[in-house]
Image (tube, rainbow, N blue to C red; front, side, top):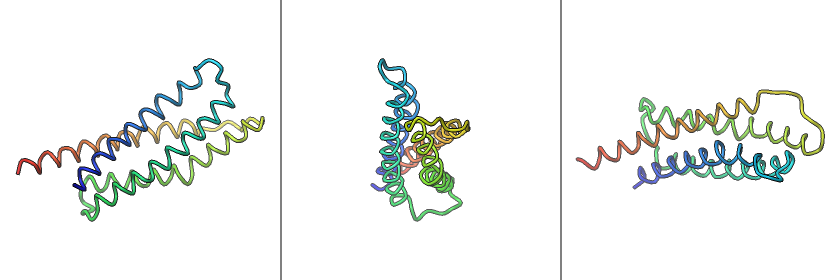
Length: 146
């Protein structure tokens, strides 16, 4: 049952990232009447909520996945996913939040590559989630045969 819960959380998390980071975030600025400050304010709320949900999902996945040998590919990928989420939570998202606050205060921030880095990290995270979800599904399928 723990593996099934972990698998669900991985796939659900991948869907959240695909829907929010790669669909909602870029499209909101194309909606009529959405200004940069309004879009940034919405984005801050959405990405803060997404980050909290990601942390909860990761805790559930970790609780359902351990103990596992570190030589296991799934365990290694899960460690990488954990490091990425920690970097997002404690480094990159706070930087992006500060940049958004500057824009909302009417003071444009200096140029940076943080948004591009965020897109790259989100892409890697999404790929990791898809791979981990697929590996877990294969494990579940293989265990049911025997």
